[in-house]
Length: 502
Ligand code: ADP
Image 1 (cartoon, rainbow, N blue to C red):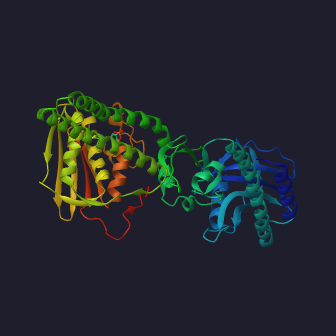
Image 2 (cartoon, rainbow, N blue to C red):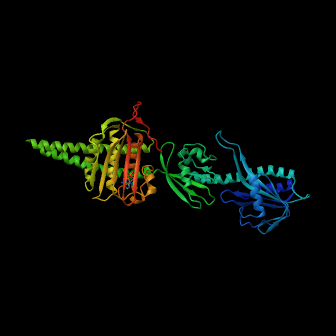
Image 3 (cartoon, helix red, strand yellow):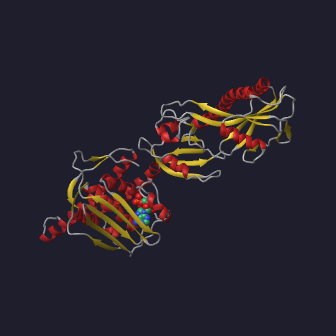
């Protein structure tokens, strides 16, 4: 960053304060090192080889004075000479903190007061040491130095900004105090904020998602963390954070895992729709064949049965399609409407068990439920909860093992639970299921056919009914998925419930 302007400035400082020389250092906030930016010596000494930094924790006369000056925000005077690399600078030496101060730009912002460097003046000409007037002057000059250093930084940031502007993903550079140094247009679009530069991250990260991500970074260069990020518009992005060598964090936003999962979702839905459609088609063909000229009572009975199965399978198709549509609504940040009616949950469970008979055929099924249980809610969506739990239980456990589905009538609430003896879930992954679109546990990655969206839907639907999802699991032993729902929905008018994406 060394510039001719800074050299001229240091020259002027030496003339005004009558020192033999002036050096200007910037302070690396992240690594506590001083970086020499300018060295002006009126006796024309060579510039010291500083290699290029001084660690201010290394406890020399100079560094102790630097720490003192910055902490107390005043000049410190040393009588003894100091060494900068191989050069001895004669005393007295004045160490002047360079603090950048700026008024708050917006009402809710704190004023900025930030140590950015130091000035070192040595060898007072004409008098034994630097007096009060010198110190006052030095303080004023240090303010100019702060402006120069920050301006030079800003130039650097402009370069970064130009580079950022050409990148198709959102990028934000954050300093060690969690303030935004620079951001590109895509990031402003993601966060829906016109000006990001200079703002504390907390101001634009109301749900704390980005601070949580940054907190996962381990000290040390190249540490990385990734999570999904839901924007103020409800769009989901993959956000990744990386630590720079200077301790700053770079945040990058890329397309949502929803988008990358979209093709897989289309494939999976098409695949899932094939089974009920094949049953419906087969049944209709059979009915057509038996409904010849002479229709016996027996034919009618068979037709009746086949029509019944076709109806069940068409309702399964209907639910699959509306589940897919609702997942895309969640993705778009829209509301999901609850069509609340009063219905018998046990009848709904039995319908699901019929619909999924082919998927559950390889397992031992245990059903524990009361005779009947009337609740209020969106029948189709509540059926989707059971549907997902049961399909997952079958998918993530071996054939022959037991799947237990139970419905329990609890005071004012109802617990719907599916228990399996399958692969289980690593403890650290339990919290993430259904919260991060596209998330799959490490234990399930080899399992084909999963895309990590079903549980997002289950969680949203459960919460929209005022209930909660509970997951218990032991790796390699099995899992329990439970939705606890209130039996009654608030009757306060609109059955439409806003699905908050958290
Ligand atoms: P997927 O389509 O991947 O099954 P889900 O959203 O239904 O998506 O589930 C998300 C992830 O949760 C799964 O990928 C899997 O890692 C884990 N999971 C869900 N159900 C079970 C279960 N019964 N046993 C073990 N892991 C499960």
